[in-house]
Image (cartoon, rainbow, N blue to C red; front, top):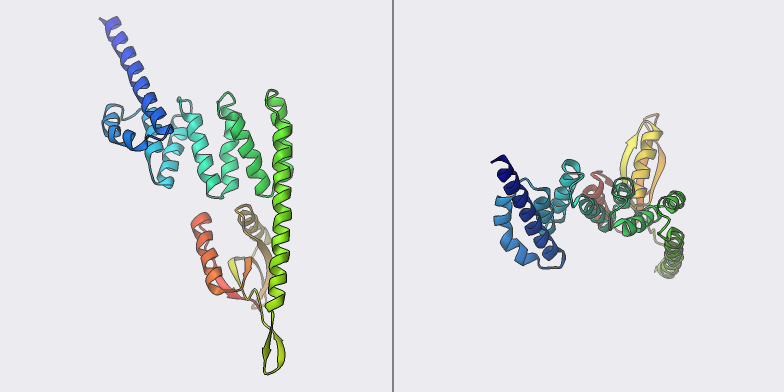
Length: 279
């Protein structure tokens, strides 16, 4: 009798895996709406199955909610069938959001815990690129050497060379854009006022994201901002005979532009900032 029950459970499990796999493949191939129609039934049948959770994440339209579902799979079912896929989904969410440091942290899990994953080639490329675009070129080169030993069948040298070359091109293009923009500004920087040439003040505003008594704390926040893609700096502020270390981001011509970046930083990093006028 026990043997019959065991066989029934085994075949039931096989059926659930096959059914969920088919729906997951449909979702991955773009048939999201079709899968959404079937999902309520599947969720009731397999409420605690990690594969069902992965399917739920695939059809979730809210990116933040989907990311949390995939994160839950990794935290609670790290050796399930789609745990490596879940890690990639979390990493891709951060990458697409421009949060390259967070993306790199998740992508790093792939060669450590899922070195045999079918996604390993892409994970390594995204990991190295996340480091490069966040300003950690030396760290990317270091890991490329580590990966070269760990994955001899993957052409790591070609990957890192291509990524570094792309980054160099972006840097040169940005320099050209800055030069062109500065040239345009210089042409309109002078204006007539009763026949007298007066220079207008550009970059009137900046953001202050914090003021710390310890410089190390200011540097920590500066690094966090830089890694997220913002031009941050630390300055000394003399306030009532007390030295504070302020963290400031960017230079802006318009206050509205500064307020927009302030809101962006708040949403991305949960750091509040104030708009101040440059002296």
